[in-house]
Length: 266
Image (cartoon, rainbow, N blue to C red; front, side, top):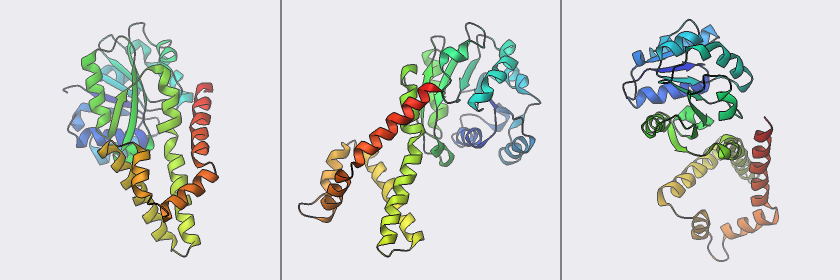
């Protein structure tokens, strides 16, 4: 890529992104520059990853071609107001702040700034993230491909319209919490039937991991895959019937809708 990538924020998500970029060979440590207001976090990424560190946010913008703001939504306006004078039309601003639209971001930077809004999720911490990118009209197709390469380095990434970002937040952003609850519930059921807690968590988590991989790698409809497991008069269809009686699918759909609606109010 031959571009310097800057990070404002070196927390868990920022660090996960840096790890992915370095492992994929997209950039070398000397091509990454980082700043964080919390010195221990900054020292940690420098020690562990060998990246360059900056004395403030402005230095990151001045030295980087792509500037990734890995900060909380409640601080992003202050950060943007601090760095806006250092942006030029050849730089790309990337924000992973949940609920902060392209319109809100553009209000705090020069008019023709290239802006990308991203919604990653926490599985990025283990290289299995799902990220949605929304770009304004100043970002070129070539630059979009560079950005997809970055976010694909720690999972999967797709470009979507900004109007879908709240839905992405409700689905892949909040979804890991719903999946963790499902894993816990699966394990609780097994524990109730006599399995040890440690074994139950392992069986449940691996079952979810393997099932997700089958969906992705076969391209088959989840309903078709469910039918393949559900033998007539068997154990699986009995469990499926129990889930339907308890409105399992409706409950999950309602959770995604509730999280999406909450995102729209942020």
